[in-house]
Length: 189
Image: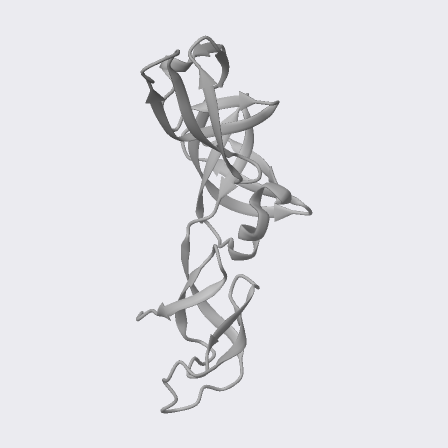
């Protein structure tokens, strides 16, 4: 971790701004006709996902945060601790439930998650955007009712409750968007 000038900013790089951890989404060097150059940067807060737009003058220096992205495989749960195996070192890594957020509802055995590591500590863990899950509990499906007219509650094999179309039955395999918890489509086995 070190100090960098605004000319060294790159997409995906980690920055510490106002004691918060961000990564650069987009940057734009601006050289006005008069005055000094500056950089307009869109940064995303790693913990809250809030996106900010900031402007930095050419004379300013920024604090770089060395971020490392790693894939980890979910192995088991112990209380509030979720255990993952680091795919590069094969070490057991414990990730707190809070870092997984709503994604915890969609964790499946051996699922790989994308993590961001800062100072040898996981600061963010994202489950895949889509999962394939089996319906474990729902009201019986209605034959011929394939219209998108209504939804009913259903429970999937991860334990999460989602809304599915009326024609979906227990035992069917579906695709779910983990960002919204919404049914996407049926999946043929």
